[in-house]
Image (tube, rainbow, N blue to C red):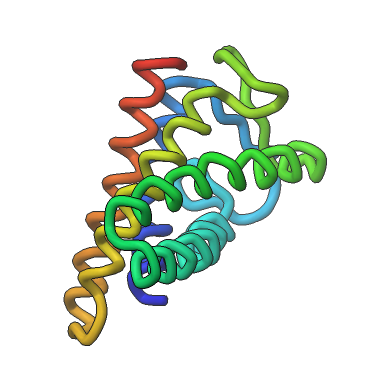
Length: 157
């Protein structure tokens, strides 16, 4: 959990970039914000990362590293559009001025594939390690999220 929530807090840098620099992510006003993101975002990211990492870890145990990377990436790319669709319907956030598939930007789908693929590699290093390792790898994962969205935005945004 420390890993996932730390990643969620560091991910706020990616949100800032998407809101202020690309102008493609728009959060609805109201509620407490941290940087450009609603206060709940680090915890929402934490929950999604825990779910995805658990499935990826189970795939790794059953089918090995390569299939775990591939299927965890596909899981991220396939499930995140649901969250984006629900968020728009709930009027929490939406996207604009970018190439879309329905209500989901193409760069988000590609970015989530990359994020989830890398997630399984980091989480595999957490077993039986100290809280300091979890904190450090959480920071790495948070920066990885930003890198993945930036690369995906440059490729298909």
